Amino acid sequence: MFHTLRDRWQGAIEPIDNLVKIARDPYRFLDDLRRRSGELAELRMAGMPTVLVCSEPDAVRQLLTGSYDQLERFAGGVELFVDPLALILTDDEHHRQRRKLLNPAFNAESVRAFGPTMLEIADGVLDQLPQGATFPMVGPMQDITMRVILRCLFGVAEGPRFEELRTLVVEYLQGVFGPDMLALGAALTPTRAHVALMKLSRRARAIAVDVPFTPSRLPVQRIADRLGRIHALLEAEIDRCLADGPETRNDVLALMLRARFADGQPMSREELHAQLLMLVIGGYETTSLSLCWAVHCLVNHPEALARVRAEVEQVMQGGFDPARVRDLNYLGAVIAEAMRLYPIGIGVSRRLRKPMRLLGRDLAAGTIVMLSVYLMQRHPSLWSEPDAFKPERMLERKPSATVHFPFGGGVWRCLGAAFAEHEMRIVLARLFTRFSVSPDPDFKVHATQKGITAGPSGGLPVRVAPIS
Image (cartoon, rainbow, N blue to C red; front, side, top):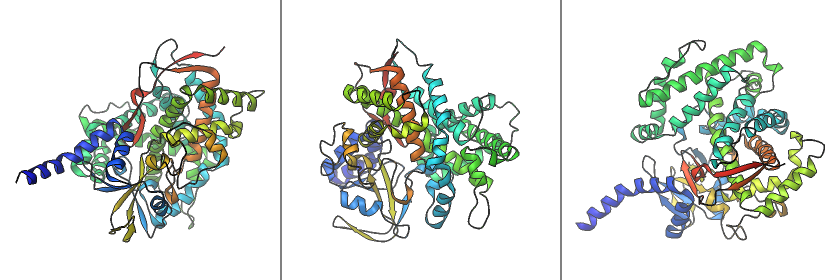
């Protein structure tokens, strides 16, 4: 009787305990899980179905390269934050068609065209860095990232509309990743919670954009009101782009409005909204936190930082040209190595469509397997000195996409990976050639989980001083 009660108690508490531990330090949690349970470990978390965490290289490779008919993407709660039409939630031909439609907006030529805007925004925010006091680096990095999203993706010009949309999006993301929505998702399931949020957002969406709007003070309604207002503003920006002529602009919204499916049809308004908000959620925290982790690595490795500065000085002789950041090979290696050590997404998940034998276990169709990005990218059989920061390894040999996949992998690899890396090269090159940056010696940084991303604790406290 005692053992039965104890087992029931542990069964009820463990999913909650796991959720708390992952939030506090996701990397440590995964290390402990592998030590306790091996490279195919069962994980239960409150509000989520049971998943198997896989970190065995051959098994991960098998799953990462699987096709639509073998696997489907399991979003792991992302349904709470994005519309069902969003690319990140789709599979099969629906996913293939939309991925093909959106790819041109994020190819190398399109990304390079955003370089001057990225540089202007980065310098403008860096001009305002507080000096002489310790501050969390995540704030400026988030500000840069959001401004880049609104300018390059949405095509919103600086002004009152820009500031309203910037404030609303930031506040919406803070709310949707906060305890009220997470509790709603746990109570209703993430999908049903998002449906409820969309229904509650209709009031705000119906208000004309030129009419002042104040969100509700009620916990979930205030999140829904911000979402509704964002949709209303996006609708106005779509109308403005169509009036301007999408062919006259090179932002992502204009490219999406010009795009056509194989049958000649454009993307619907509803789908445009879904993909645009997915790009915001997928690009805001991920890029800003990846920037912070790269800063963390460089300020704690002076020899690597000196090499970055020397490379920028050599490549950018005669003035900083954002198009030439692609020639900053060592800086690119720094970014890749920082993302290896500190991936902001701790795993990517797949649901089996067919039974599969994996590491000696017969898994039924419907089983969910999380491929651990963090554990794979520090796997001792794949990396020499796996816990050491060594950018040179990325120059000596480009790692396979099945052992280094911070942007995900296979057919579901992040659409905006090249966009994010280009932005990161510009921001880091400008930050470290304009400022001396030092870590807070009294603060020990570790990873904390916020929503779907893992970032440095305390927002990465640093001090900066201009380089004369």
